[in-house]
Image (cartoon, rainbow, N blue to C red; front, side, top):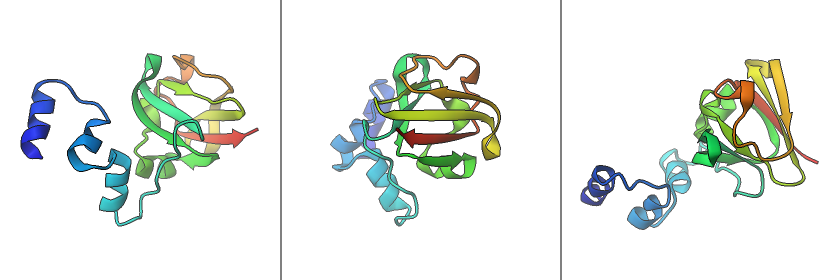
Length: 132
């Protein structure tokens, strides 16, 4: 596996799907198993809001089901709010993003996909996802 991973990295061919090819499971399942079940599995795409590290939906950070998430809840799910640059919000969902922890500070509510998050880009410290 290490040789295969080395080839992928050197060839700049990384993708989240490569983990399934190398190990038989996706990266989220691998992390869940490694954590001994302490890290919650993310929601499947389309069953929550999906967050991306770059504009134009590049580099998936994860998909979260409805709920309230502060930095302490985001980090174990592999999401750093200071990396969120774009989001996909399926029909029937809403996400309210806050610039500060504890659901305070500047906030924006999104009910549709956003290829770039304007003033909230890389500035989210807590968020609330609602299924409408």
